[in-house]
Length: 609
Image (tube, rainbow, N blue to C red; front, side, top):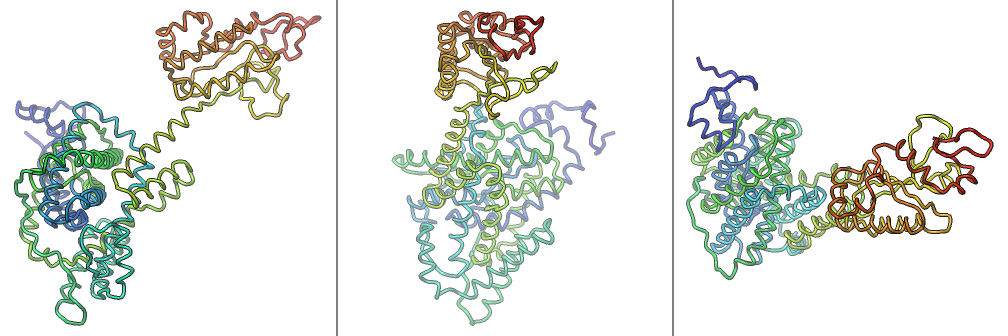
């Protein structure tokens, strides 16, 4: 008889042809569907629907769109992303970063809230979806790894400041035209501060305090929804009297079921919109993949980046034809979804359906929501996005990464957002290239001249003469790849080792940490080999990695060097190299750090290893 108990991972699962076909399309979680998993997913979906209600309204307002567009974006895009993606727990929908980015990018092109603005938002959403899907289909998911966490942190913190700035005038009850820049908003708020509405301040403060208190003392509660409810009650109570001017409200919301639309825009605007869509694609994919990885670590699930991108792309393509704007994975909903016990992506399906029902039965109440209450909640979101402890950790761990994050933050609040995220990513890549262009090259030796089985040690940094070196053989450990960006640094260091009449003529490179070389790297070692042999010495390598040896074979360097110059262990390398050294210099040498050194005149054995 069928049972609802979960099956062991190793147990065979009876399937039907339709179920197998669904699993190939959606994933292996289809085999796990049962009454118990559906019940768990339904309860988690209810929590997701409740959580997204105030967020969707707030984020749509932040994007410069009517409030119902946030609700639309939490329905079909959420459903499609869950079923087509790879994560079992990520819930997609409107997010603060996407909303703010869309607003900042489109506000200069059309009046906020107008039909033209809405059409631009839908067309950009379609372009983002197509780009995301192509990235997944072309197996380019690894591109997400090049979005630096430091750049994302700076962008997120900058977005937090912009959210706070744009929410400030609603919180104070100061009416401003839509589409103003952050600087203009600050100037106008300061100039009109005497005309603030005390009722709006009270409503926003109450919503913020309620949500903040519940988040602190009962974090599992729908604190944003409760904060919104408290602000709405306060706004309704104030509307009954005439002490202060009325507080602006959301107004009629309508149905959450998204109407079908066909995005329309002038062909002359397509090139400019494509650039904006590309930047939004980077922002959305960076968020989605980071969230999917974070949730996957908690749930123990492996995330397929390419499939995740395909799912996000399809969700935005479908969303653009169903009155939705750019969506991506939401951390504020995905983590609670996991903690609420969701077992499969069906939790997102339930969330989308239950959201439509909730709005259908509560639309009159949603119309009473004060904009000041939404502004108060946006301040809470902004504070959470800034994440001061993470900035402190970044300062302690890496000053260069901190500088990248700070530069991205500054660019976010002063430049266009797509420029900011691209600038942060570029700075991160430049920082990485600079670090890898200076691989460490450490001189090796021994700190116990007469001990047996002693390890090699780094002698750089020790006072001169305390750890003696062989005058004819230099021992050098290579730590890093030798590619076109690093050849100048490596060549300068090798040249220094050859400088002077007393420079060692032979060089043994311990190369097990040299992971990669390109053509420029192979040519560098060819030049070093030529220079060493011209001065009467030679070049040797200890434990070069197979990819490096293959590159040497392809370029012909290995044939010039000779395979007998590659050694698997240090003992055999020294046993072969030391007899090749100049015997006259060895006879006068007092160092004799190797066991293979010839004995001094009048002695019977070498003093070293």
